[in-house]
Amino acid sequence: MAVAREFSAALFSCSKPHASLFQRLFIRKKTSKIFVKGLAFSTTEEKLAEAFSQYGNVLKADIVLNKAKNRSKGFGYVTFSEEEEARKAQIDMNGKILHGRVLYVDMDPPDEQKKTYKHAIKNTHADNDDVHMD
Image (cartoon, rainbow, N blue to C red):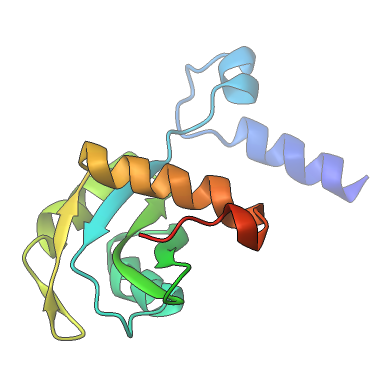
């Protein structure tokens, strides 16, 4: 019962008073993922999230790993709860130094990085025979 009460309170406390009940129930806020390149091999997902948390609510920080070497490939993704927070982080952190390396931050990763990330995600549950050496 308490869960239903919290849900209804959250539902009706929407910041837009003109929003319909349908919009409040079925339209979610956009989350924004930014691409971060130039990460030090020693940077962890926790450190990455901490560095970007000054710009807003970080939902997730992912660092893409090289399975063969068992270390970072030097790039990753940070997901914010709001698109505005992601844009601010992208503008402010691009060109900054984190753990001795200059960061390149963009809202949309280059095509070759997307392919590598998709390949890494696809092979997370693969057997050792299916892992390709780079």
